[in-house]
Every structure is written in C-alpha cells, then in structure tokens.
Length: 131
Image 1 (cartoon, helix red, strand yellow):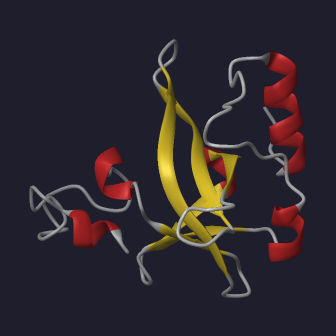
Image 2 (cartoon, helix red, strand yellow):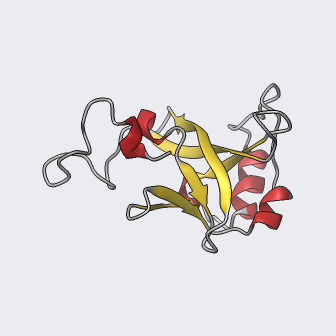
C-alpha cells in the first residue's frame, strides 16, 4: 500500500502546493511497502519512531517474514537508511533479503530500549549509517 492510498486529508492531491515527498504525514507512511534495489519486497513500515528530545525521526519499524502476522519479525531501520521512491510510492532499503533475515530484530512483545547508546550503535553499524 502507498502513502497516497492513506491520504485521509488530501495532502498529496496537489503536489505543487502541498506536502509531497519532502514533507509527509507520518500516519500516511505507516503501512508503506519497503523494497530493496533488486525489487524484492522487504516488508512494510509498522511504526515511525521519533526522538522527542531533538524532534527527528530515528527509525522506521519494518515488519518482515511470517504469514498473517505469525512469525513476523520486527526491525528498527535507521530513517537515514531508507530512501523514498516517489515514482513507485514506496521506500527503498539498500540491503538484500538474506542480509535482512540476519539483521538485529525483535518480537512485537519485546521491544528493545531504542535509546540505549550501544543498541543505537549496533543498528546504525549494521545498516552502514554514520552518526
């Protein structure tokens, strides 16, 4: 599903005057598909994590694997690792499917402490993001 499909307020209808790929509503991004550069479906965005101390988006929580939510694994992907593909109305993550399977992830009932500095460094390093 794409952000245009969840555009409740019509903010993307007239891209010349309103929000577009540079400024977007967080709620419309929840559920967006994520693909890699090879065109493989990597899952979809379940949540967007905002650092309330500095007002920046830190992570997108990506779901991957499982069937109908069973066996699904969640991943905190640094926001800087995602690129919006406005032509296809989805995000691109530069990681192959096999590497994502081995990425540090978590269960929906056991979220990590995303403010823990060692955890932040581990995630950023895995996705090649420099602080």
